[in-house]
Image (cartoon, rainbow, N blue to C red; front, side, top):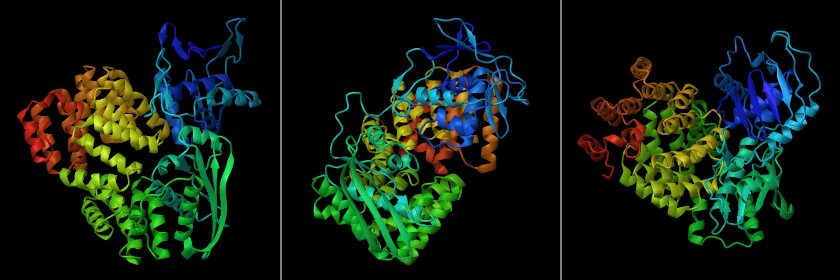
Length: 626
């Protein structure tokens, strides 16, 4: 089947878009959006409908839709002020304003849209039920599996999962804990039900021989009506634990059930009516019952003892801890601020609450990283030190301190000792493995970093951060074809990730596609990253004036914020201005710009490794020489 949209041709069989003899390369999401609007022509498609049709099964915001429309318009050279293809109706949605013809290869051309009225006078809406059903079937089939992505070019389909095609049969000893549902009367205990789910993930993750999916991936399905067998297939697990929490005053009712995904068999289920102070006992009962039902061997007793190290006997402190973790997971400045406040409240109520100190350490770090509050870096280190002191067998304490030692203090030997200890204590924690992989990457040990990040990804396959970082390791190791699908998968998981968008643009520079790179950099929301990319892409295109202008803007941004020395150093390295590259790299080191920790694997500096100043800088940073 083909559609003629104005001067465009959409070939749905070959998944190509052409204008005359020229092929227009579109990412999958842009292609899907174009096809949805073409099939609906001349009707208006609401934003809610676009979210359901173009992103089936994924929770996205209206801003994501408008951003994707902008990307599609840019690719088609369509001016939104005088659209040739896509018109927008404020408060209603989008419609195809070009004439659309459906081309059946075995029958004459039949028009499905004639000259449309102006966008300000939309065509009366007709029933779209057949269109919606057909589109849902066409777009949803096979798409939801986030490990396959493509662009609308021949032979562009690529595997994106960190798992190899010949991955073994799904192990019976594998499980995902879905977020427990808040059944409280006022629906105001979601932080508590989420916290219970996370605690169960951590408990089960300490069971030898049991593969437990990490929080990021299990919570990806929160609030969705996806069938359990589809979730299990996506995450490659045999068992699903789900449940609900009803909290009223000091009373709890927790219902949990263990289900075998392929047969929908209820392996075990139980309801617990308890006092709030018994919450830890209930967590253990559920975890032990699940393990018993799966007939798995528990960890040795000495390893299990660490579970109690992160607990508190103060229920209010535990409540604040859960609030802190809930706020931290928002991933923005406001969330980190709220998390710091909650974690501090928890430790004030129980000064020996090691897990709360570990949580505070990371919240303080990211608050400093995003807000510029540099005093928070020191508070982060102090909290991490306290976590390790209070609980010397708690993996999350070593993981937090090791991360901060490497990224903030450039104490890489100390960071390695901490992260190695964390891996020994909790070898099935995706976050611990990920941070260890990051340190291996910083050391330039890319094959080892890739292997460890792949293990982390097998435990947390829908983590944008793990997926993106694995792509970065592949790109740094010059395995470019392996990197692209991982960046694209990261953008499906988190469409607004400016890190993933920037990484994709950098990959396209390495692939000698500066036009595509420039396009991606221009879609990057972070001003500093956008200007860095533009300066490099314009220079690669030979647009010297435009490149200089972008660099001048980047320097002006630095003068305002006194932040971002490493990005400037990278631009100068890309331009071959080595003296200035090292000048700004030295500034980055002096001001503890966290980006410089990647100097050994940063592709912009690859050509400078023979310069004596490079080796001198490595020595200053306590990084091993090549």
